[in-house]
Structure formats: C-alpha cells, structure tokens
Image (spheres, rainbow, N blue to C red):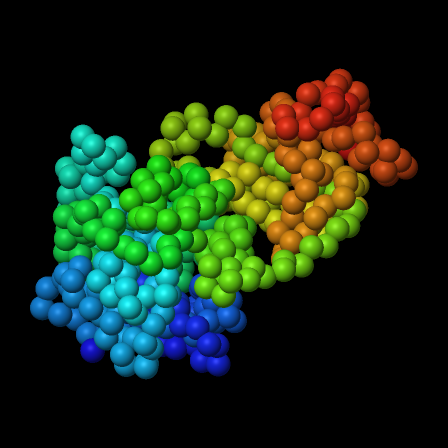
Length: 433
C-alpha cells in the first residue's frame, strides 16, 4: 500500500509531488516551512503527495523499490485519486522518478518540474559532478553501521545548513528516523548510486521547468544545467542560495512563484512594501580558520551558541531577524540607535566564546516582499559590514546623522568603495559613549 494525501481539492489543476530520499506525510506538517509549502502549493493546485514504498506511512517491500516501481507508484496514486493528467514535481532524488514518468506517460503529464536534481549522482570521465563510487559507498557504510547521524541529516546528505538552530533540526530528525530504518535507507542509497537517466532525458516531450540553487551543496548547478540541456525546450532557472531543501531559505517564495506560473500560466503578484528601516549585518571574523582548528562538531556547537546570543540581543533591541547565512546575521530595526547598540553589544557578548564579529549598520528605504527584505539599502548595509575590521561596528553617515543626542559616538573611518554600489561612501566607527 502506498500512502497519499490530497489538499487543495477545489483547484482545477493537479500537481503530484515526488519527494527526495524519504518522507512522512504526517510528520511533514510538524516542520513550519514544510507546512507552509503544502498550503502554498495547495492554493493554486490540487496537491497530491505520497510516501514512496518503504518510507513514511507506506508499506515496506521485501527490498528497496526499484526506479521502475517508484515510477509506477506515481501512476497508481494518480489512479487512486482520479487524476487523469497532472504536473509532476520531482525534488532531489525524486526528480529521477518524475523524469521517467514524464517520458513514459506523456499523455498523463501536463508538465515536468525538477528541483535540485542530477541525472546521475556519480561522477565519471564525461560527468564531473557528484561523488565517486568509492565516496558514495563509504557514506552508505556509515549509514548501515551507525544509523542516521547529524552529519548525514544536516550536512551534504540533506543539504540543510549545518548551523541551523536546534529547534529546526529536531522535527527533521524525527521525520527521517520515523520515515525509514537505517538499513532500508542504506539499501536505497546503494541502489541510487546505480541510477543514470541521461539517456532517457531526450525522450521527454512535455513542458519542463528545471530549477537549482547557485551553490546547492547536493545538486551541482552545472549538473542541473546539463540535465535541462538534454530535455528539448526545457526552461532552466537559477535560484540564489546554498541550501538544498527548497522550502528552506528566503528564496522559497520565489521558487513557488516560478512553479505557480508554470502550472497556472500566471505569476502571483508579490506584495511589495517600502519603508524606512535600519539594517544590521554581522558575521564571524576568520570563521574558516576557526572552523578548521575546532573541527566540524565543535564549530557547529560554537556557532549555535553565537546564534543564541545574537537572537537574545535582537529580542531585547526590537530587532527582526531577516536571514541567517552560515555564521552571519541580517536583521532590521525601526530605529538606528537600537541597531547600533545591538551591534556593539553583540561584539562584546561573543568575545567570551573566543571569537570576534564585525558589523555594519545603515538606514534607508527597504523593500519588503512577502516578508523578505531587499533593495539598495540592504546591499549598502551588507557592504559596510564586509569592510569592517574584527570587533568593529561601522555605520553610514545616515545612521550618524539620525542618532544625534543618543549618546553614541562616531569616529570618521574614511570613504569606502562599496562593491555594486555607486559612488564612494563615508563610514563611521561607532562606540557607546
């Protein structure tokens, strides 16, 4: 038995989601971003999700389901829900089964959507992306012997930022550990090493959309381009970012908007708000060297402590966390003095951890699109932060001018050329009193 769920039943078009390695229909709802994804896709399509054989709520076969069997599961689920024709959305490893289905059943495929997918995951002389067969087998051996590890779940195996907060890791651990056994997962990954769909891609003759993040740690951007080039008429869209799971990160709405336009023919109008705000950027100085000295586990623990400190200061300063990329923070404030004081406090608060941060603060018009901040003011703030030295807080002249009488002191730090920003900008070193 293959378990499935249907949402958005009143919508006129069907969208079947073939997920990556494993899934669990019920536990997926426990992840806020995943629940948002279901609701968002269900706003314009009848969304049909299912757990592949041997994963989640579906029955387990005697051995790992073959690519052919997994592909046939798409057809069986469509039959069960009365779907004659659907858009097939394959993510990561699920992209291979989605591609085979589209090639085999074009009369039942309205279009093919692929995210973070490679035609094969093993590199060779004419395919320079992926791991070697030896590297793949070594990873599988660890899975079979030790079971699921954080290195697999939050490193290259899942493509999730290894420094994501613990509260985000916990539901993903529960999902993976509940979705399949270590032995079954190892067997499935072993079979995946043998899959290569390059030869079948030219036989796909349905509208196709291929998307991939620029720095996806699992599916290489050039491998995704190569895949798209093998499908006649496929459209390729590069999305910024460095996370594999597409519903993670600030680009998630952009990705879903691309899917909605492909499926419905119309792109949603994203709500754009413009307002004056102060942006603050921070990042850990010399983080690559420190990470190398400490090792992966100790570095992750250190960064998590750093994140807790910064988030606590943001809460006390009425700052809003907009993005966290690796060891850096991007936040907005409704007042420049609060932003500067938060940055200064952060510099002092992380010193006992044995690290130093730098920060940049700027005030300007910020564009907010569905909760994501952008615009030239954001770029300027990021560039000012990037030009700061260790334990230094730099601010633009706008910030200095707006904080008169606050008790903050600003020392002229000279003019800087900010990459991607016209003209030269005078910046000031901020201190408290």
